[in-house]
Image (cartoon, rainbow, N blue to C red; front, side, top):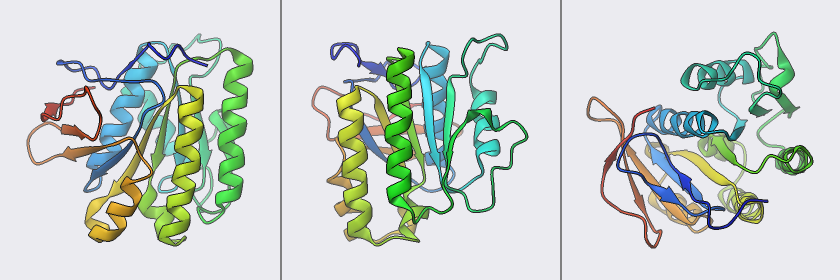
Length: 223
C-alpha cells in the first residue's frame, strides 16, 4: 500500500521522530494524556495529507470526530472526509452527521465485528487509493474491561499484523494506571514499541522505546 521507505513523522514538533511504515505502538499513559497524544498524531497525519481511522470504545464517534477535527485542518471542500471511525461505544453515535462512521459495533466485547470493520476500512482505503493512514485505538483499557487479557493480546496481534501489511501507523492507548505490570508486559509483546506519555509538565512529552534507530529521549509534543 505504502512505499516502505516513506516513514511517518509522529507529530509536528521538532525534533522529528520518524517511524517506519507499518509500525504499531502501545501508548501508555494516565488518562487523558494518551488520548491527547494519539489525537495530536492523527491530526498531524491529516494536516500532512493522510487519513485517520479511529476505533473508539470510550467516547461516541461524534465526540471523537469533533476533537480530531478541532486538532486538524480539514478543508470544508475536501473531496473525501479524511476521518473514519469505528464506533464501539455502547451509548450510541452521539453525532448528527454520521458520514464519518464506518461501522457501529454494539459493544467493545464484539472483537469479531471490530476486526471485520477494521479490514473493511482498509479495503476501502485501498480502493480509494489512500496510501497514508494513521490508526488510533481509544482505548485498550476499555476493551480489557469486557474481554480477558489473552484474547485482547491476540486481537492486538491481528490488528498490528494488518497495519504492518498495509504500511499504516498504529497507536493503541492503554491507561497504565488501570492495569498490573503483568498485563502491560503481556500486551507490549504485540507491538513494535512503546510510547510512554507524560503530562506532568505544561506540555505533553513522549519517549519511544523498543524501536531500532528511533531516539528514546523524552520529546515535547505539540499539535
